[in-house]
Image (spheres, one colour):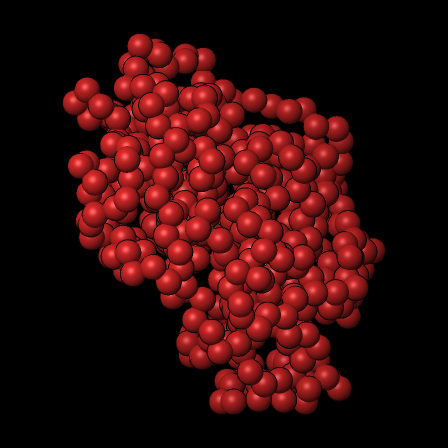
Length: 454
């Protein structure tokens, strides 16, 4: 492996007797993983359905290793049954204790791995605000939120400072998967090696300090920040956490279960003048020469006090007279009542989790996107279909995995179907929704989202 000389010198000094093991780990294969989306399917159901040779990821109860497969080509991926994720990256969401009803913020969320993992744990309760500062990366984030059937998420494209101006003291849990120098990904990503520079850690530390500063302001008393990186650099990990804790005395490091492969945070990697005992060993590291995965760092920071449960709901409810077409759609085609906290943005219909007031923010998606108001009718969205279960719909069309019409549907084609009912049908693979179709005189008018077609 052709590593930068200065990087090799740095790692030899840090790892000492483990350095040769680290270098040898570059000869090993990259580990590939996928995680069951438990909003839609259990881990064991997914194992049986895919029929792959899968191995459990020890630190993530919903995670698998896979080899020699192309899961992104599986139609079950189009049904949002799993998320493809590097195994070590699953550890942050796995170790963060999420309770039903929590208000969670993922500050640097794209492409959405940790957000979809948190959403599974929330089980459609509470609220998830998932944010990325990059408008381009937010596109992938939004698709993954919708593909996974997450109905309680808000997607924003904001700076930490702007978020903090809106959400002061609001969240119970915050994930800071911080931008970092990426040293832990060198085995998997050769481009990360090419982009490594001696000053990159300094640049990343500046970003990390800023993000942590605003994260603490958005955390409710008694809340938790999960801080993670995919780098080995002590400046971005143990030293960053030490600095934060000594400047914010209301926080403490809390331990988590490391029996699955984590080693303790390294006290020896602190600077000589960092002499206070902040229990840095309570942080954790995944080292690629010890586990099946890439390098990862995790620290769980808890704020003292009892929750204040601050709310920022809208005062004005939407005029229900404007929602007659939506109510008619629910009545005619669904077996569930209309959602709460319905709002109209121009012609778009959303169910806003917790009725949050988002005024003043750059919002990519303000909640569960139900569809569009057209002239005297309502047209449901792709996101709406993905957030439903088959039994929620009055009329459905189901294809088996090997049905040629399934491929035709995913390509956006229209074709004849065997249905006695006219109007909107929820289209499924087996029992798992993948989109909408509208049946007219026995022909399915394809409503699969154009941007998702194969």
